[in-house]
Image (cartoon, rainbow, N blue to C red):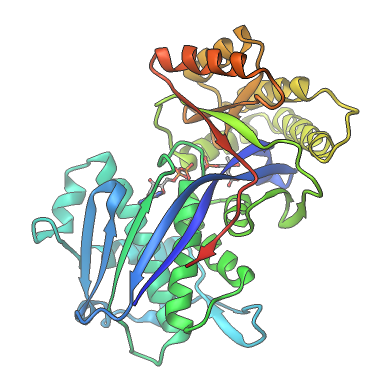
Amino acid sequence: MVLTVTAPGKVILFGEHAVCFGKEAIATAIDRKTTVEIDCQSESDCVCLNLIDLVYHVKWPLQQLSKIKLESLIDSVEGDGDGDNQKIGYYNDEIGKLLHEIVLTGINCANNGDIKNDIASKNDVILSAIESCKSFLFLYLSMASSYLEAGKLIPMAVSLSSNITVGSGLGSSSAFSVSLSGALLKCFKGSQPDNELINKWAFQSERQFHGKPSGIDNNIAVAGGTLMFKDNSIFYANSMRLTKIVLVDTKVKRNTKTLVSKTISRRQMFPETINNVMDAIGDISRKAWKYLNGDDSFDFKTMVEMNQCLLNCLGAGHSAIDQVLAIAKKHGFQGKLTGAGGGGTVIIFVEDTPEKSEEDLLYDLNCGEFKAQTININCPGISFQ
Ligand SMILES: Nc1ncnc2c1ncn2[C@@H]1O[C@H](COP(=O)(O)OP(=O)(O)O)[C@@H](O)[C@H]1O
Ligand SMILES: C[C@@](O)(CCOP(=O)(O)O)CC(=O)O
C-alpha cells in the first residue's frame, strides 16, 4: 500500500525576516505543492529515498542504520497533542554532524556509487540533495526511536516530487518538511497524526535546513489558508480579500540560511537601526492584516512599497528584484520580494485590476529572462490521500 501526502508552498505577503525577530508576518498558502509517496510495506532491507526533482535516488541498508545509537537523536520529550507522551526529535548542530556521517553510509542508486564521491563533486544540486537526505534521516531515525520498539527499523521506499520552484522563497523546504513529517508519522504511528504533532516535527526538520527558522513556513504549510504569525502565536484570517497573485521567478538562486545570517550580522553592526526597521515592518504587517480582513483605513499599495524598501535596508534586495518591480510599476502595479529575498521570487498584487493590464504585465515580464505567472492563494494545507 502506498501512502500519499501533499503540502503546499507559501508566499509571505508581509513581514519576512522581521518575523525571525518576533515581529508579525503574514503568509498565504499557494496552489503549488510537494507530494510524498511512501511504500512502507516494501520487502527490501533498505530505506530508499528518491528525490525526483533533484534527480537523486539513494538507499541506506537497514543493517548500517541499526548500528546508530538512536537515543542520541532524541534530545527532548514533549507531549504530542494526542494526549499520550511521545518523544519529539530535537535538532542541533551535534546531531547535524552525526547525520552527515549517517548520510555517507548510503548508496547512490543510479550508479551504485559512494555518497562521498557525490559530495566531493561540489555540485550545487547534489549538495542540496544531501541537505534533504539529512532532514529525511533525522525524521526517519528519530521517529523510529520515538515510536518503534528499541532497535527496530522498518524498510520503506519514499519518493518526493514538487511543482514548487526549489530555493526561490516559496517555502519548498517547509513543504518538504511538512509533507514528509506527516507521511512518516502516519507510517510509524499507524494512524493519521494531528496538525500540532506534524508541525513540531516539521519545525525541527526546518532547523536542519535554516538554522533559525521563525516557524511561519511550517505553520502555513500545515494549516493552509492565510495567517498572521508572531512568536508562535497564530491568527487566522476571518475573510481574505485577495485570491490571486503574480509570481515572478527572477531565476537568481539564493539560500535562506545565508540571507538570514546576513540580516543577523547587519543587526549586530547596527542594532538600533535594524531594530527600528524590524519594528516598522511589524507595524506594516499589523496594518496590512487589517486591510486583508476588510478594513480600508490604510492604502495597500503604499504598505507594499514601504515593506519592500525596508527589506532593502536589511540587505534582502537584489538588482533582479528591482528590475521586476520597475516593470510592474510601468504597468501600474506594486510588488515586493517574498521569502528570504536576494533574488528568488517577486510577488505582484493584481487583484481587482483589468484583465488586459494583467496580461500586458505578464507578457512584458515573460519577454525577458524572468518567468511570470498568476497563481491562486489562500489554498488548503497538508492533505492525506
Ligand atoms: N522537491 C524537493 N526535493 C528535494 N529537496 C527539496 C525539495 N524542495 C526543497 N528541498 C530542500 O530545501 C532546500 C531549499 O530551501 P530554502 O533555501 O529555504 O528555499 P525555499 O525558499 O524554497 O524553502 C533545497 O536546497 C533542498 O535541500
Ligand atoms: C526570511 C524568512 O522570514 C522567510 C524565509 O522564507 P523562504 O525560506 O525563503 O521561503 C525566514 C523565516 O521566517 O524563517
